[in-house]
Image (cartoon, rainbow, N blue to C red; front, side, top):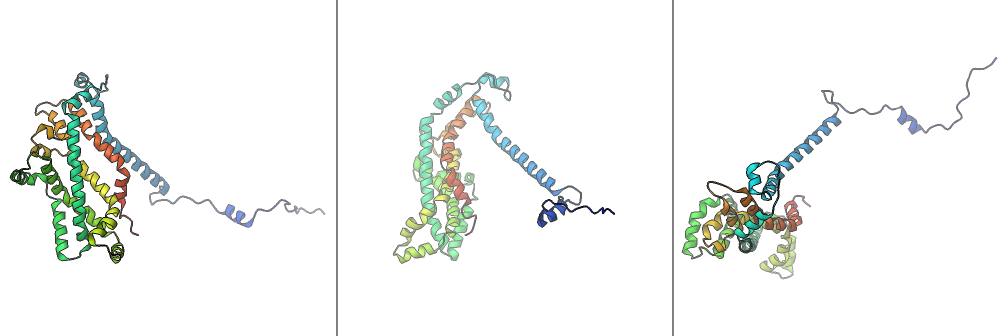
Length: 313
């Protein structure tokens, strides 16, 4: 009688862990109560976030692109189709604006006022913030709150008192008067920036400097001030933007046309009845051009200053 029992396979057997893994069913994506996989919902959320981010970027960049394109168009082309596709481009608008706003002298005036104001705000603000950050008493807390309260006072409220004060001090139509005004207006912001940053610096550094014989001023200038570089870059960028783009203070306190800033001369093209975009837009772009270079050079320090203190050690 022949046997029907077949011979066992002679090939190599797969390992046990391979057999166990192959026997398991493939994992299925978890589903929400509505039956939609969670992976699909995550992909939809990421795609929606990307679309919203791109839309916000386009809405932010579109006015700037419109200003640049309009500045390069001729007046007849803009009058024919203000929002249409340009048919001819020219650089004559920039050359005319450059000569009409006296770009060289007005830019030097703005650089002088901005630079002196930033230096004064940095020095006075850091020196005022150092004791406010280290002395824990009632009077220091009260003074700090008064500085914070000063950040909420709009400049329009103090224009008339400042004008009378500058007149009595014989500082009207002078660079010194404008620098004093900008220093006083931006000092509360500087104290707020520096006080918050100095409080995050360990006090052990100052104790070690005191053991070496350093006084308070020497400790500040040799230990604390070099550590304030990131927040100083952020503060200087913030203040420079405000001073450079400001129109009210130079317009009120500088009557001499040769001392006015670039923004005052640029916005002098605005007429109460008509506005010529081929003249105004090139002047505005020339006015903000130095700010673009300043931000490009200080971009790394600005980002470092904004992120400083975000992670505790």
